Length: 389
Image (tube, rainbow, N blue to C red; front, side, top):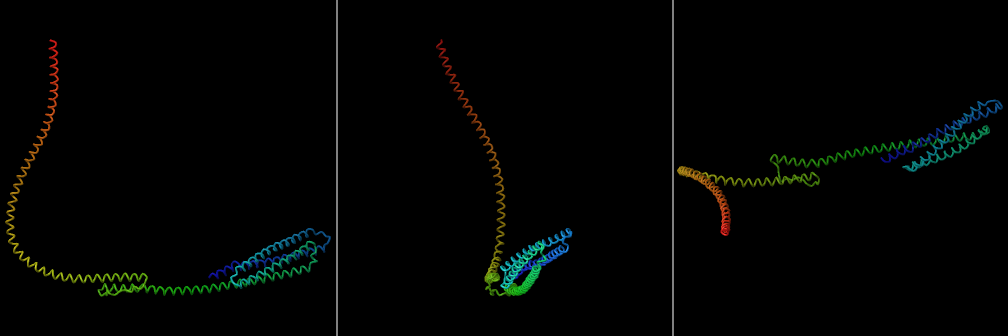
Protein backbone atom coordinates (compact mmCIF):
# COMPACT_ATOMS: atom_id res chain seq x y z
CA UNK A 1 0.00 0.00 0.00
CA UNK A 2 2.88 2.37 0.70
CA UNK A 3 4.31 1.78 -2.81
CA UNK A 4 0.94 2.66 -4.33
CA UNK A 5 0.90 5.85 -2.30
CA UNK A 6 4.41 6.70 -3.51
CA UNK A 7 3.40 6.07 -7.12
CA UNK A 8 0.32 8.26 -6.85
CA UNK A 9 2.33 10.92 -5.03
CA UNK A 10 4.96 10.83 -7.81
CA UNK A 11 2.29 11.24 -10.49
CA UNK A 12 0.61 14.10 -8.63
CA UNK A 13 3.77 15.95 -7.54
CA UNK A 14 6.20 15.25 -10.40
CA UNK A 15 4.74 13.66 -13.53
CA UNK A 16 1.71 15.90 -13.96
CA UNK A 17 3.50 19.17 -13.04
CA UNK A 18 6.34 18.27 -15.41
CA UNK A 19 3.88 17.42 -18.19
CA UNK A 20 2.02 20.70 -17.61
CA UNK A 21 5.31 22.60 -17.73
CA UNK A 22 6.29 21.00 -21.05
CA UNK A 23 2.80 21.65 -22.39
CA UNK A 24 3.15 25.29 -21.36
CA UNK A 25 6.53 25.46 -23.16
CA UNK A 26 4.90 24.01 -26.28
CA UNK A 27 2.09 26.58 -26.28
CA UNK A 28 4.41 29.51 -25.57
CA UNK A 29 6.85 28.30 -28.25
CA UNK A 30 4.00 28.26 -30.79
CA UNK A 31 2.86 31.72 -29.70
CA UNK A 32 6.43 32.95 -29.94
CA UNK A 33 6.65 31.58 -33.50
CA UNK A 34 3.43 33.38 -34.39
CA UNK A 35 4.75 36.69 -33.04
CA UNK A 36 8.06 36.17 -34.81
CA UNK A 37 6.27 35.61 -38.11
CA UNK A 38 4.24 38.74 -37.47
CA UNK A 39 7.43 40.70 -36.80
CA UNK A 40 8.91 39.44 -40.07
CA UNK A 41 5.76 40.24 -42.04
CA UNK A 42 5.48 43.75 -40.60
CA UNK A 43 9.18 44.47 -41.08
CA UNK A 44 9.22 43.17 -44.67
CA UNK A 45 6.08 45.11 -45.45
CA UNK A 46 7.58 48.24 -44.01
CA UNK A 47 10.86 47.69 -45.91
CA UNK A 48 9.09 47.04 -49.23
CA UNK A 49 6.76 49.99 -48.73
CA UNK A 50 9.66 52.24 -47.93
CA UNK A 51 11.50 51.19 -51.12
CA UNK A 52 8.44 51.63 -53.35
CA UNK A 53 7.37 55.03 -51.99
CA UNK A 54 10.75 56.57 -51.34
CA UNK A 55 10.44 60.28 -50.90
CA UNK A 56 6.62 60.37 -50.51
CA UNK A 57 4.81 61.52 -47.38
CA UNK A 58 3.70 58.41 -45.44
CA UNK A 59 4.52 59.45 -41.86
CA UNK A 60 1.19 58.38 -40.28
CA UNK A 61 1.19 54.94 -41.88
CA UNK A 62 4.83 54.39 -40.98
CA UNK A 63 4.18 55.34 -37.36
CA UNK A 64 1.29 52.88 -37.11
CA UNK A 65 3.37 50.12 -38.64
CA UNK A 66 6.24 50.77 -36.25
CA UNK A 67 3.90 50.58 -33.27
CA UNK A 68 2.58 47.20 -34.42
CA UNK A 69 6.11 46.01 -35.05
CA UNK A 70 7.28 47.15 -31.65
CA UNK A 71 4.28 45.46 -29.97
CA UNK A 72 5.04 42.19 -31.76
CA UNK A 73 8.69 42.36 -30.72
CA UNK A 74 7.65 43.07 -27.09
CA UNK A 75 5.30 40.08 -27.03
CA UNK A 76 8.07 37.89 -28.45
CA UNK A 77 10.52 39.02 -25.76
CA UNK A 78 7.98 38.46 -22.97
CA UNK A 79 7.30 34.95 -24.25
CA UNK A 80 11.04 34.31 -24.33
CA UNK A 81 11.22 35.11 -20.61
CA UNK A 82 8.23 32.91 -19.82
CA UNK A 83 9.69 30.00 -21.81
CA UNK A 84 13.01 30.36 -19.99
CA UNK A 85 11.23 30.26 -16.59
CA UNK A 86 9.24 27.21 -17.69
CA UNK A 87 12.44 25.47 -18.81
CA UNK A 88 14.11 26.18 -15.46
CA UNK A 89 11.04 24.87 -13.59
CA UNK A 90 11.03 21.75 -15.78
CA UNK A 91 14.71 21.12 -15.04
CA UNK A 92 14.08 21.44 -11.30
CA UNK A 93 11.15 19.02 -11.49
CA UNK A 94 13.24 16.55 -13.50
CA UNK A 95 16.06 16.67 -10.94
CA UNK A 96 13.56 16.15 -8.13
CA UNK A 97 12.01 13.23 -9.99
CA UNK A 98 15.43 11.62 -10.41
CA UNK A 99 16.11 12.00 -6.66
CA UNK A 100 12.68 10.59 -5.69
CA UNK A 101 12.51 7.82 -8.31
CA UNK A 102 11.21 4.59 -6.76
CA UNK A 103 12.48 2.29 -9.52
CA UNK A 104 15.55 2.22 -11.80
CA UNK A 105 13.25 2.45 -14.84
CA UNK A 106 11.69 5.65 -13.53
CA UNK A 107 15.10 7.13 -12.77
CA UNK A 108 16.32 6.30 -16.29
CA UNK A 109 13.22 7.89 -17.80
CA UNK A 110 13.63 11.12 -15.85
CA UNK A 111 17.32 11.27 -16.71
CA UNK A 112 16.32 11.14 -20.36
CA UNK A 113 13.72 13.87 -19.77
CA UNK A 114 16.39 16.00 -18.08
CA UNK A 115 18.71 15.56 -21.09
CA UNK A 116 15.94 16.53 -23.51
CA UNK A 117 15.03 19.62 -21.47
CA UNK A 118 18.67 20.64 -21.32
CA UNK A 119 18.97 20.25 -25.09
CA UNK A 120 15.76 22.24 -25.66
CA UNK A 121 17.02 24.99 -23.37
CA UNK A 122 20.30 25.18 -25.33
CA UNK A 123 18.52 25.17 -28.70
CA UNK A 124 16.10 27.81 -27.51
CA UNK A 125 19.02 29.98 -26.46
CA UNK A 126 20.57 29.71 -29.91
CA UNK A 127 17.16 30.41 -31.44
CA UNK A 128 16.73 33.61 -29.42
CA UNK A 129 20.30 34.68 -30.29
CA UNK A 130 19.54 34.42 -34.00
CA UNK A 131 16.22 36.20 -33.50
CA UNK A 132 18.06 39.05 -31.76
CA UNK A 133 20.31 39.34 -34.83
CA UNK A 134 17.24 39.56 -37.06
CA UNK A 135 15.67 42.19 -34.78
CA UNK A 136 18.91 44.20 -35.01
CA UNK A 137 18.74 43.97 -38.80
CA UNK A 138 15.13 45.16 -38.69
CA UNK A 139 16.13 48.13 -36.59
CA UNK A 140 18.91 48.84 -39.12
CA UNK A 141 16.56 48.53 -42.08
CA UNK A 142 18.40 45.52 -43.49
CA UNK A 143 15.77 42.84 -43.03
CA UNK A 144 15.72 42.01 -46.73
CA UNK A 145 19.38 41.01 -46.49
CA UNK A 146 18.73 38.37 -43.75
CA UNK A 147 16.83 35.81 -45.83
CA UNK A 148 19.25 32.99 -45.07
CA UNK A 149 19.23 33.73 -41.33
CA UNK A 150 15.45 33.88 -41.33
CA UNK A 151 15.30 30.46 -42.97
CA UNK A 152 17.67 29.12 -40.32
CA UNK A 153 15.51 30.58 -37.53
CA UNK A 154 12.40 29.04 -39.02
CA UNK A 155 14.15 25.65 -39.19
CA UNK A 156 15.16 26.10 -35.58
CA UNK A 157 11.54 26.88 -34.70
CA UNK A 158 10.37 23.70 -36.37
CA UNK A 159 13.10 21.67 -34.68
CA UNK A 160 12.22 23.18 -31.28
CA UNK A 161 8.56 22.45 -31.81
CA UNK A 162 9.36 18.87 -32.75
CA UNK A 163 11.64 18.41 -29.74
CA UNK A 164 9.11 19.89 -27.33
CA UNK A 165 6.26 17.85 -28.82
CA UNK A 166 8.39 14.69 -28.63
CA UNK A 167 9.17 15.43 -24.98
CA UNK A 168 5.54 16.14 -24.26
CA UNK A 169 4.46 12.91 -25.94
CA UNK A 170 7.08 10.90 -24.05
CA UNK A 171 6.04 12.45 -20.74
CA UNK A 172 2.38 11.78 -21.53
CA UNK A 173 3.16 8.12 -22.26
CA UNK A 174 5.27 7.81 -19.13
CA UNK A 175 2.60 9.48 -16.98
CA UNK A 176 -0.07 7.26 -18.51
CA UNK A 177 2.09 4.20 -17.92
CA UNK A 178 2.71 5.29 -14.32
CA UNK A 179 -1.02 5.78 -13.83
CA UNK A 180 -1.73 2.33 -15.31
CA UNK A 181 0.95 0.81 -13.08
CA UNK A 182 -0.50 2.53 -10.02
CA UNK A 183 -3.97 1.38 -11.02
CA UNK A 184 -2.72 -2.18 -11.54
CA UNK A 185 -0.92 -2.11 -8.20
CA UNK A 186 -4.04 -0.68 -6.58
CA UNK A 187 -6.17 -3.46 -8.01
CA UNK A 188 -3.61 -6.05 -6.89
CA UNK A 189 -3.51 -4.48 -3.44
CA UNK A 190 -7.31 -4.43 -3.33
CA UNK A 191 -7.43 -8.09 -4.27
CA UNK A 192 -4.79 -8.84 -1.66
CA UNK A 193 -6.73 -6.84 0.90
CA UNK A 194 -9.94 -8.69 0.04
CA UNK A 195 -8.08 -11.98 0.33
CA UNK A 196 -6.67 -10.97 3.72
CA UNK A 197 -10.12 -9.87 4.89
CA UNK A 198 -11.70 -13.16 3.77
CA UNK A 199 -8.94 -15.20 5.39
CA UNK A 200 -9.29 -13.09 8.55
CA UNK A 201 -13.06 -13.61 8.57
CA UNK A 202 -12.72 -17.38 8.10
CA UNK A 203 -9.98 -17.54 10.74
CA UNK A 204 -12.12 -15.43 13.05
CA UNK A 205 -15.12 -17.73 12.56
CA UNK A 206 -13.01 -20.83 13.22
CA UNK A 207 -11.45 -19.20 16.25
CA UNK A 208 -14.88 -18.13 17.49
CA UNK A 209 -16.17 -21.69 17.05
CA UNK A 210 -13.15 -23.11 18.88
CA UNK A 211 -13.35 -20.56 21.68
CA UNK A 212 -17.12 -20.96 21.90
CA UNK A 213 -16.76 -24.73 22.08
CA UNK A 214 -14.06 -24.48 24.74
CA UNK A 215 -16.31 -22.18 26.77
CA UNK A 216 -19.71 -23.76 26.13
CA UNK A 217 -18.69 -27.42 26.63
CA UNK A 218 -17.53 -27.04 30.27
CA UNK A 219 -20.62 -24.97 31.05
CA UNK A 220 -22.80 -27.62 29.39
CA UNK A 221 -21.15 -30.31 31.53
CA UNK A 222 -21.80 -28.27 34.69
CA UNK A 223 -25.43 -27.78 33.67
CA UNK A 224 -25.83 -31.53 33.08
CA UNK A 225 -24.37 -32.35 36.50
CA UNK A 226 -26.58 -29.74 38.21
CA UNK A 227 -29.65 -31.18 36.48
CA UNK A 228 -28.70 -34.68 37.71
CA UNK A 229 -28.26 -33.34 41.24
CA UNK A 230 -31.57 -31.45 41.07
CA UNK A 231 -33.41 -34.61 39.87
CA UNK A 232 -31.81 -36.72 42.60
CA UNK A 233 -29.77 -38.93 40.26
CA UNK A 234 -26.48 -37.07 40.33
CA UNK A 235 -23.18 -38.84 40.88
CA UNK A 236 -21.26 -36.60 43.28
CA UNK A 237 -18.04 -38.54 42.68
CA UNK A 238 -17.76 -37.23 39.09
CA UNK A 239 -15.43 -34.23 38.54
CA UNK A 240 -15.03 -31.79 35.63
CA UNK A 241 -11.81 -31.50 33.59
CA UNK A 242 -9.63 -28.68 34.97
CA UNK A 243 -6.71 -28.87 32.53
CA UNK A 244 -7.61 -25.53 30.93
CA UNK A 245 -5.75 -22.56 32.36
CA UNK A 246 -8.36 -19.99 31.38
CA UNK A 247 -11.49 -18.78 33.13
CA UNK A 248 -13.42 -21.95 32.21
CA UNK A 249 -10.74 -24.04 33.94
CA UNK A 250 -11.03 -21.85 37.04
CA UNK A 251 -14.82 -22.16 36.90
CA UNK A 252 -14.55 -25.97 36.60
CA UNK A 253 -12.14 -26.11 39.56
CA UNK A 254 -14.54 -24.00 41.66
CA UNK A 255 -17.44 -26.23 40.62
CA UNK A 256 -15.46 -29.36 41.58
CA UNK A 257 -14.73 -27.81 44.97
CA UNK A 258 -18.44 -27.10 45.43
CA UNK A 259 -19.39 -30.68 44.48
CA UNK A 260 -16.75 -32.07 46.84
CA UNK A 261 -18.06 -30.00 49.75
CA UNK A 262 -21.61 -31.00 48.83
CA UNK A 263 -20.57 -34.67 48.77
CA UNK A 264 -18.94 -34.37 52.20
CA UNK A 265 -22.00 -32.58 53.56
CA UNK A 266 -24.34 -35.28 52.29
CA UNK A 267 -22.09 -37.97 53.77
CA UNK A 268 -22.18 -36.22 57.14
CA UNK A 269 -25.96 -35.88 56.88
CA UNK A 270 -26.22 -39.64 56.18
CA UNK A 271 -24.05 -40.50 59.18
CA UNK A 272 -26.02 -38.10 61.40
CA UNK A 273 -29.27 -39.67 60.16
CA UNK A 274 -28.09 -43.11 61.21
CA UNK A 275 -27.10 -41.80 64.65
CA UNK A 276 -30.45 -40.02 64.93
CA UNK A 277 -32.30 -43.24 64.14
CA UNK A 278 -30.42 -45.06 66.93
CA UNK A 279 -31.15 -42.25 69.39
CA UNK A 280 -34.83 -42.29 68.39
CA UNK A 281 -35.05 -45.99 69.26
CA UNK A 282 -33.54 -45.36 72.66
CA UNK A 283 -35.89 -42.42 73.22
CA UNK A 284 -38.88 -44.63 72.40
CA UNK A 285 -37.83 -47.15 75.06
CA UNK A 286 -37.29 -44.43 77.64
CA UNK A 287 -40.69 -42.94 76.75
CA UNK A 288 -42.41 -46.25 77.49
CA UNK A 289 -40.65 -46.46 80.87
CA UNK A 290 -41.66 -42.90 81.68
CA UNK A 291 -45.28 -43.71 80.80
CA UNK A 292 -45.33 -46.59 83.33
CA UNK A 293 -43.76 -44.40 85.99
CA UNK A 294 -46.31 -41.70 85.28
CA UNK A 295 -49.17 -44.13 86.04
CA UNK A 296 -47.58 -44.96 89.42
CA UNK A 297 -47.05 -41.29 90.13
CA UNK A 298 -50.73 -40.57 89.37
CA UNK A 299 -51.82 -42.93 92.17
CA UNK A 300 -49.53 -41.32 94.68
CA UNK A 301 -50.67 -37.88 93.60
CA UNK A 302 -54.20 -38.58 94.88
CA UNK A 303 -53.02 -39.11 98.47
CA UNK A 304 -50.72 -36.15 98.19
CA UNK A 305 -53.73 -34.06 97.10
CA UNK A 306 -55.65 -34.85 100.36
CA UNK A 307 -52.65 -33.92 102.45
CA UNK A 308 -52.34 -30.78 100.45
CA UNK A 309 -55.92 -29.75 101.26
CA UNK A 310 -55.29 -30.13 105.02
CA UNK A 311 -52.07 -28.20 104.68
CA UNK A 312 -53.97 -25.51 102.78
CA UNK A 313 -56.47 -25.14 105.66
CA UNK A 314 -53.65 -24.83 108.18
CA UNK A 315 -51.96 -22.29 105.97
CA UNK A 316 -55.19 -20.27 105.85
CA UNK A 317 -55.33 -20.19 109.67
CA UNK A 318 -51.71 -19.14 109.80
CA UNK A 319 -52.45 -16.44 107.22
CA UNK A 320 -55.29 -15.07 109.39
CA UNK A 321 -53.01 -14.98 112.42
CA UNK A 322 -50.33 -13.30 110.34
CA UNK A 323 -52.83 -10.71 109.19
CA UNK A 324 -53.80 -9.92 112.84
CA UNK A 325 -50.12 -9.68 113.75
CA UNK A 326 -49.57 -7.34 110.83
CA UNK A 327 -52.40 -5.08 112.10
CA UNK A 328 -50.82 -4.95 115.60
CA UNK A 329 -47.44 -4.19 114.09
CA UNK A 330 -48.95 -1.32 112.10
CA UNK A 331 -50.48 0.09 115.33
CA UNK A 332 -47.14 -0.18 117.11
CA UNK A 333 -45.46 1.53 114.14
CA UNK A 334 -47.98 4.42 114.36
CA UNK A 335 -47.34 4.81 118.09
CA UNK A 336 -43.59 4.71 117.43
CA UNK A 337 -43.96 7.43 114.83
CA UNK A 338 -45.91 9.61 117.28
CA UNK A 339 -43.31 8.97 119.98
CA UNK A 340 -40.56 9.89 117.52
CA UNK A 341 -42.31 13.16 116.69
CA UNK A 342 -42.71 13.93 120.43
CA UNK A 343 -39.04 13.20 121.06
CA UNK A 344 -38.02 15.39 118.14
CA UNK A 345 -40.18 18.22 119.60
CA UNK A 346 -38.61 17.72 123.04
CA UNK A 347 -35.16 17.78 121.39
CA UNK A 348 -35.98 21.06 119.67
CA UNK A 349 -37.30 22.52 122.94
CA UNK A 350 -34.21 21.31 124.77
CA UNK A 351 -32.00 22.98 122.22
CA UNK A 352 -33.88 26.24 122.68
CA UNK A 353 -33.73 25.86 126.48
CA UNK A 354 -29.98 25.28 126.25
CA UNK A 355 -29.61 28.38 124.15
CA UNK A 356 -31.73 30.39 126.66
CA UNK A 357 -29.77 28.98 129.60
CA UNK A 358 -26.48 29.81 127.91
CA UNK A 359 -27.72 33.35 127.43
CA UNK A 360 -28.87 33.57 131.04
CA UNK A 361 -25.51 32.29 132.26
CA UNK A 362 -23.76 34.91 130.14
CA UNK A 363 -26.02 37.62 131.52
CA UNK A 364 -25.47 36.37 135.11
CA UNK A 365 -21.72 36.47 134.60
CA UNK A 366 -21.90 39.99 133.33
CA UNK A 367 -24.22 41.01 136.22
CA UNK A 368 -21.83 39.44 138.73
CA UNK A 369 -18.90 41.34 137.25
CA UNK A 370 -20.88 44.57 137.40
CA UNK A 371 -21.88 43.73 140.98
CA UNK A 372 -18.26 43.10 141.96
CA UNK A 373 -17.23 46.39 140.38
CA UNK A 374 -20.00 48.21 142.32
CA UNK A 375 -18.92 46.45 145.55
CA UNK A 376 -15.34 47.55 145.01
CA UNK A 377 -16.45 51.10 144.31
CA UNK A 378 -18.66 51.05 147.44
CA UNK A 379 -15.71 49.94 149.50
CA UNK A 380 -13.62 52.72 148.08
CA UNK A 381 -16.38 55.25 148.78
CA UNK A 382 -16.66 53.96 152.34
CA UNK A 383 -12.92 54.31 152.82
CA UNK A 384 -13.00 57.81 151.46
CA UNK A 385 -15.95 58.67 153.72
CA UNK A 386 -14.15 57.31 156.74
CA UNK A 387 -11.14 59.34 155.88
CA UNK A 388 -13.27 62.38 155.56
CA UNK A 389 -15.09 61.89 158.87
